Image (cartoon, rainbow, N blue to C red):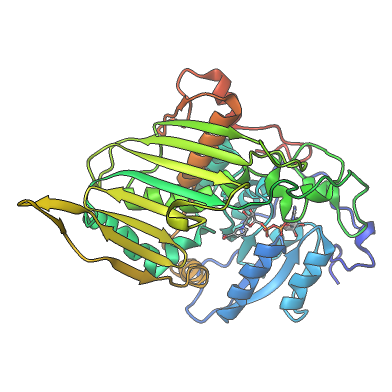
Amino acid sequence: MADSEITRRNFSKTLAGAAVGMLASAGPLARAVLGANDRIGIGLIGAGGMGQFNLKDFLKTDQVDVVAIADPFVPNLDRGLELTDGKAKGFKDFRAILDNKDIQAVIIATPDHWHAIPMIMACEAGKDVYVEKPLSHTLAEGRKMVQAVAKYNRIVQVGTQQRSGEHFQKAVELVQSGKIGKVTLAKTWIHSNSSPAGMGNPPDTDPPAWLDWDLWLGPAPYHAYNRNRCIGSFRSFWDYSGGTLTDWGVHLLDIVHWAMGVDAPKTVSTFGGKYVLNDNSEIPDTLEVVFEYPASPVSGKEFIVTWSNRHTNTRGPDGHNYGIEFYGTEGTLFLDRDGYTVWPERKPVGGESVMAFGVIKSEGSAQHYPHVVNFLDCVRSRRKPHSDVETTHRSTSAPHVANIAFKLGRKLRWNRDDEQFPNDPEANKFLTKQYRKPWNMI
Ligand SMILES: NC(=O)c1ccc[n+]([C@@H]2O[C@H](COP(=O)([O-])OP(=O)(O)OC[C@H]3O[C@@H](n4cnc5c(N)ncnc54)[C@H](O)[C@@H]3O)[C@@H](O)[C@H]2O)c1
């Protein structure tokens, strides 16, 4: 057993919080070129819900050997190890994975506040990376991640897997072909209803014995353990996430950016609050965002994008609780993971009201598995993956900018070139955050 490999028995004795040097690692370790038939050694960092989902699809390709898994929450670590039939080694500290020469690529499926540091360290250690969305926890962090990928010449796929879905690709082509005319508005939304109790108000307690809470918190400010702050529900706390807006907004806004050929809004206005839920979550239960975008190369026109999320009522446009809808001068396109529908506009022609084309419908298509396969293909070919880091940094930036407008309670202007709020030092303070030692390395 490697020094720091862990089991339930020795868990509490292994020290995860030992100070490390600034992004200290063993330097580029990955093999330079992988042949078409070479298996790819994989390390998984974060074996919770999405880590296990990723692991299953990576294993399904039969192109990989899962060499090691790291997670400071032992029940999830155990579940991940079980998926490998006990073949992988388990650690609570992800640095053990970065030092392993048999690992060419890592999957990072930690909470959002724990994406940037392991991703940058993995790039520095010569690993390729499949990192979950939202790419970053702050705008500055995202830019540093982009820079690390370029500096260490790594292949990085971000977990915005809708880009690998055939029906998403076709829907984007339809918008770009002009079928629905000039799009002046795109709506994005997701709704649920957990009112009024939400996730409740459990008290702060000591962390369970099978969790290294200090390592789970990592760069986040110290806070006493609270069940709601941790596994799965971390998304409701600003220290670990950007709330529903970054959690789902990045998936949906990413497709709008792609279809419209843009990558950043000019302005953003956000309205909302925690009006009804009486749990200990910090994020709004009702949120409305209006983004103004510059002229789209597709339509030649400026346009508006809206984001809407509620945890208090499930009904969205056309009865869909989540989705994307493009409104064009010739038609409307609704799109979600289960398919798309295009409805033509009725237009007056010679005194008659005429539809330019019939309703077009498509079923949904697989997204996650082809996204994993695309990543592994790119690890071999060194081509750019479907969700490359710069593109996804831009899709993640829009929700970050909107969250800052929400926190400040006013409309903001955004300059995508220098990634600053022009002449707005108050807003620019939100571009980054404080990192708790010894993780103050970004
Ligand atoms: N692509 C998608 O559609 C999709 C879907 C769900 C979640 N996600 C993303 O996946 C990430 C994880 O979400 P989840 O729902 O699986 O959360 P989760 O809480 O179920 O799992 C996160 C795991 O990371 C572990 N972890 C925390 N700090 C760690 C560290 N320093 N090193 C290693 N492991 C650590 C936790 O203990 C936990 O087991 C989030 O960023 C989320 O946005 C993406």
